[in-house]
Image (cartoon, rainbow, N blue to C red; front, side):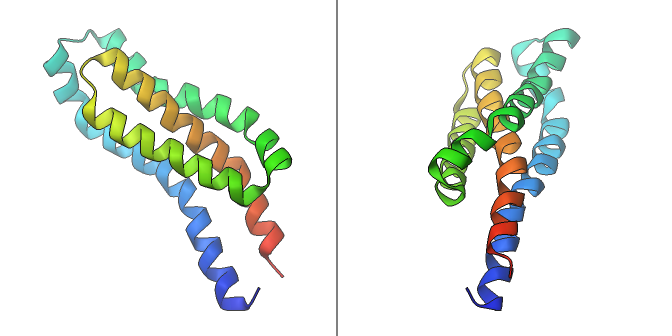
Length: 126
């Protein structure tokens, strides 16, 4: 792989880390409106926010297994699918439980990408 492609793919794959920060920032701006919309208690609002973090923990713990079995690139593709499902599902959620589920799915993707992306970058680097 030439130097330009390595840089391009390294930046592209590293955006997975950006998504973790983005998710944290986005929910902090929306949590007040969500709490008001569904009349959530402080505890339920906290659980809704934390649902992505629980997914992140599990995704980070388990993300290396499919990367070893199916390959880094294929695993990164399926992580992107998780991101898409999470974004679409979160946008279309009709209840806090649905939102928590889709945030958890996104967290799985964030956690897995925090493990798989550095593996892939190290493998394609010269």
